[in-house]
Image 1 (tube, rainbow, N blue to C red):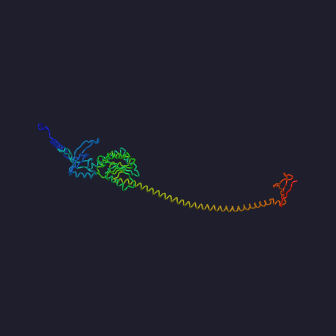
Image 2: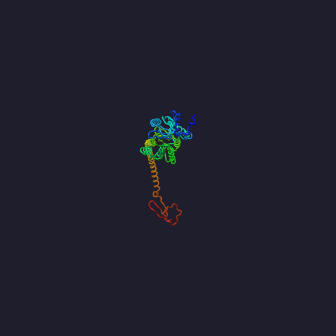
Image 3: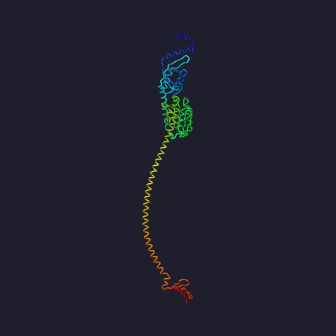
Length: 416
């Protein structure tokens, strides 16, 4: 025990700090693997990297621990490229890491960790684990494939674009549409959003909400970003952002990453392409395919109609020839029949005319014989009274004059 007479009544700050330093060195004499999240990172002019490590409660998300860290310049020059090569991620804040550290306490700068090594596989695993957890949650919520199940319009010309206005990716998208798809009369409306950093999730969701207010005016939504650090893609693994995209009423096309990157938003989107230019080409190809199909149908209809017209023309020609032959045959038959009728009628009429002439001659002779002058020639006379033939003496009176007509003259008599 320390003799009470030898214990001073107080300690200076430096003395306490030295005692803490000695205690920490005795308690943590070796190197240790530390699992933590990098909340802040800064590299000074000398190349030294200063970090802030944090730990959050897995249930509440609240901060449960925090400590400072540093990577000396000679070590950082080795760790940084190695980590980025293995993970495809920029070494920056927001990453969960497994680093080998020594526990230090400096009398002036206090408690901290000095990083000597890093395990890139842990970070990759953490990212994949988080991504799989988000995808699993979306699947359990029944929204994972909703956007993929939407029908993309055959002519998607009305495009709502979510991107940074100054992003090179948006410029690439516009240029490709203008150069390759100008003849299709595309209509592009930009809804500006922050595409990297902590504000990305909230900014893109707000842009989606603005589009939703007028979504009947658009055929498709295109989310694009140009270049940027691969680590900036972590915001596209957000559950909230992915859920909004999955349930959006218009098909969403994403061109937000590089060839080997596939975020959760890419997974739920209707169609994922590599780059903004590829997104433009996808839409152009979609309309070109529809155009080619219409041209094919047009040609098929033309060929079918031409073939049908030729068949009908040949059929009508054959029918015309057949009708002409039939009509000629019918006409020839009718002519022959009419000629026979004419012959029969001619013979009949000749006989009829002969008979009628005979009858007429007979009647004529009879009439001639019955004519008054012929009868008078035979010695008969006609008695006339006042110009009328007298058939009976009845009605004649004494003193009236009558005329007797002979063949060759008249004689007047008075009734006595």
